[in-house]
Image 1 (spheres, rainbow, N blue to C red):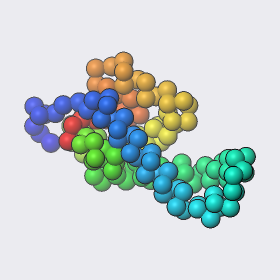
Image 2 (cartoon, rainbow, N blue to C red; image 1 turned 60 degrees about the horizontal axis):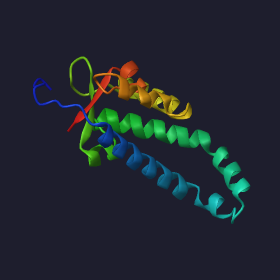
Image 3 (spheres, rainbow, N blue to C red; image 1 turned 90 degrees about the vertical axis):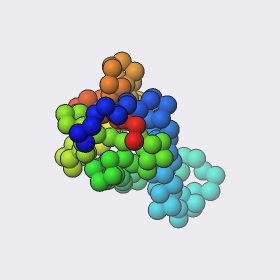
Image 4 (cartoon, rainbow, N blue to C red; image 1 turned 30 degrees about the horizontal axis):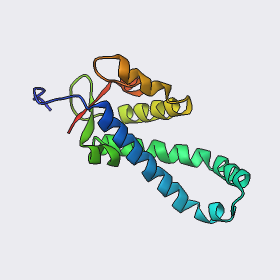
Length: 143
């Protein structure tokens, strides 16, 4: 993309909407994949939590693949597409590389694991960049 005049940073609200949509989508996929195990717990919350912990690596891997593929291939996850925002490279304002998408995805998962602390960065810089945006050298803009 050579025309940077039309670039406008995505709002925190649109980014939050995209995050919620993506998390619901991942949750739905995980529930569908492991429905037999989940439904067999009945009302036993402790057993349900044990089952959920059993699948934590699969969930993290699914999030990694989802975030990496969609950001690299489409420039946006399904949530971002619905929210009409996209991820671009900070240096040339174009499509992100597969390596950048992977880096951003891993750092996003790490931010989630540590109380979403990496997301708070977006409130304290002009580019509204989260931790994973800063290190991945990306911006989230309106589509």
